[in-house]
Length: 82
Image (tube, rainbow, N blue to C red):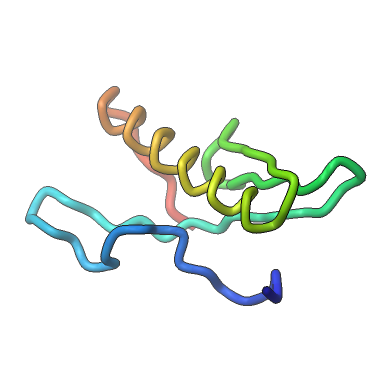
């Protein structure tokens, strides 16, 4: 998989499923290092993940984004958009 290609990180449909749902478009950066792959989301401070393969890092950052956004919304915090 070409890392420069835009990837839909959501496992759910892109369209909101209800009036309360929102679609967030966030940039995830995945970098290869000596231990595998490291992923982070610049707009979500502290939202990062890692994996031994690109696909594992992608799955892990997808989960981290979901939990990070859910936690911010539960705390009535704003979710930054690029």
